[in-house]
Length: 106
Image 1 (tube, rainbow, N blue to C red):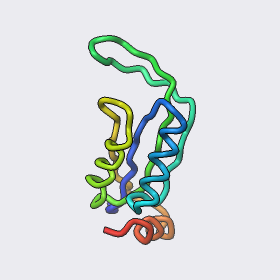
Image 2: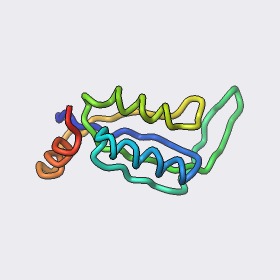
Image 3: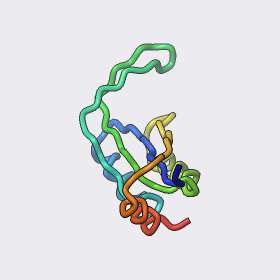
Image 4: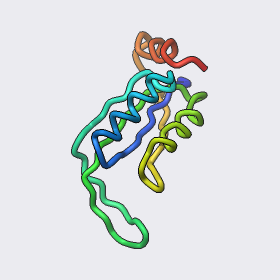
């Protein structure tokens, strides 16, 4: 197990996705953000079944920075309840994991 994580965030607009991606990398809260367009999300919201076209942000960072990252995302996000969830990176290329570590100070 490493101390690195992947954080998933969905947005409804490309402009918002890019704004969040740039902000978290500029603030060194993330090493990299992939913006994946055109995903379909099906979910329950306010007791209604919804289907939306969204974008997915895949954010690589360190576990120790999650709270600061979450706060930054929530401050920039337009959703009332934005998705900000993390999963551990169990293993990975040593060079890539070291790059994340160098890019995101604790």
